[in-house]
Image (cartoon, rainbow, N blue to C red; front, side, top):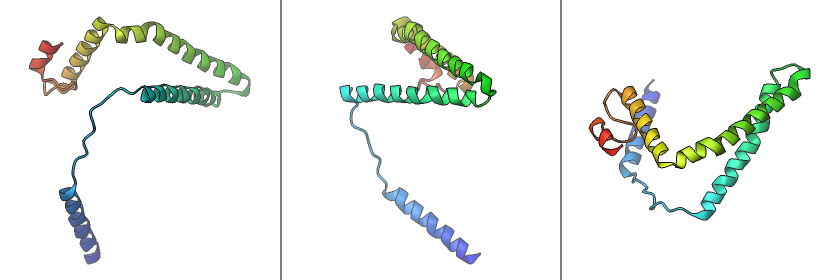
Length: 133
């Protein structure tokens, strides 16, 4: 019992010393780099190429042997349909000015409802939200 108390006291002392000498690491000013953007697009494509077969195999594992191919085709069709709908509707809506205002207002309403007036997720207080939206 005495040894565990010494260990706990030593761990607490070591933690407080480490916290006392810690210094914050500030990031540089953000800049848009073409190579970083290209890598993000490639990484997104790789994740999508990995997710589609994984999702298809997951759902195919829950059905009988005779329904595996149909289930895989349904998963692929669903992902293709969602991708097309995103290109047609989602991307254009997210880049349009009125859509951004609508999204911010919806987020502000949701956060106000959830936080009950203590402050918004967007970093705005309730009195400032109507002014900046």
